[in-house]
Amino acid sequence: KYSNNLFKLNVDNDMLTYRSTQKDIVFKVQFHKYKDELYARVNEKHNSPDKAVAYELMDYGEYFIVKAIFEKHMNLPKTDTLYGAIGIDINVDHIALCETNMDGNIVLIKKYPIHKENTKNKRNEELYQLAIEIMEQCKSKKKSLVVEDLNFKQLKTRMLYRPKKQNKTLCEYPSDNP
Image (cartoon, rainbow, N blue to C red; front, side):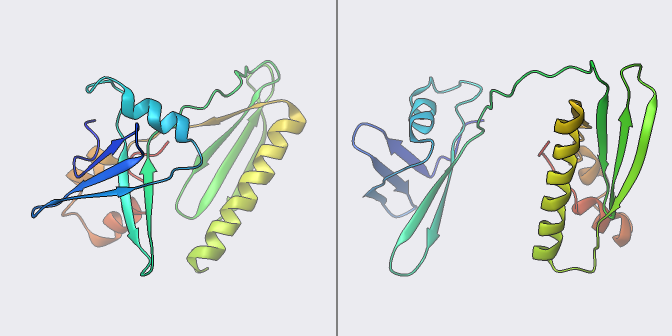
């Protein structure tokens, strides 16, 4: 809500201040993609709901990279369920898909396995390909994609000292990402 208080960006001169316990370190930065949106966020009133910006400083030996992280609001086209909808349920080992017609009746149920034994990169590629396939189905059938928005943050807190298998399964879900 209040951003990262270790960094302060001055948008007038592109200077970023890192406040350490010993002294302030000031250096010139150059942001490229979404720079205008970032600067607009930084210029908002202090307690604005969308003002939060987090900074990540990455040391690459000969140089540093500063990442400015903020929530980007996308102006996605509004869709309706005139032709029905395609809903997905994301699980640890599979993605379940259900397609309905314009009356809400189920016309297709499909299960896409996620191979947990693959490396992280292979799993990510597999998920990427599945996402493309599902989006192509939505486009070709002119149907909206429906995804449940789950927030596991409270459940994770309550399950902190539960059996290892339950904790492991729960930790595979991102905590705040839709």
